[in-house]
Length: 371
Image 1: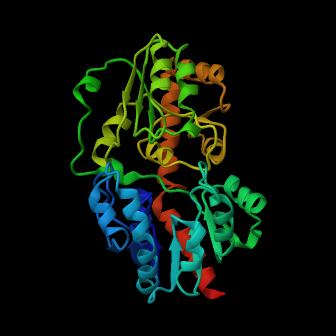
Image 2: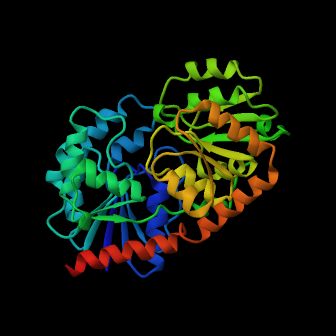
Image 3: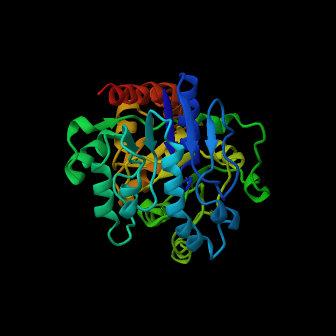
């Protein structure tokens, strides 16, 4: 079986490479069709091909270039046309993301089983027309994978997909992060911290509830809060909230590369994801791989991780008081934190292992090819 995995903008390199490697281990002939990731190293290919077909000039400009967006837009149509040729020999095309659903539906490779993983069921910060175009794109698929039962229900209710075209395949835990040959240490000012650390990690976006966590932290004593990740929202209001907290709040407002992630994860006494809305999150599956105790908002697929596997405690979304109480209690209960961490590690090695994900994904492939 030959499968083309497609992520034009390299939106999720950890997921793309982990899925490709697990499929290759299971005997699938895999080609990952993507673009060069501009922010740092990506996992090495293990048993599969990588074709950086998309956006060659834009990728060369670097992430801070003002011209990058315009160049990327100009390269999009040629890239989609090259994709049609590149997938000719594939038995199945498995799309991870598409950049411009308004036009991409008409540019998809010629008819063969087409599958899309809806990492976000619908866009959270949409451009004009993007939501309607995404619905049309999803309806053009032979099947759509989501990572939770919550996501499956949204596909049925908000997109109108029939149940026989929706498949739930869990997100895998990013265990490769814990086994890198060249891990980097924490910055010296962070390595010198001696007390408990609460970690919020990942891109900073409005829907992630960073301000809720900062409000909650005002009532938490005896710990530091680290907010680590590239800002996609104004930082000044967050810094103003941080200044009101009795404990130290440290910002690391930049992209953190894979070799840096283990030091942050291993240092965290609690990893907190106070999101206002989500289906699933790559940060969650990095924390699971490191066996970290988790506090999650009770939204989306987060609820399934907590309730089915005991791998997290839940707090109501947007409720700073409840979140504060949960954080304070867990900081005072090391045995409970150890229990949560052990459950996280078991979940990462079991239902959220990439070999389990590959088996379920291949079952979807075989079903589509057998129709």
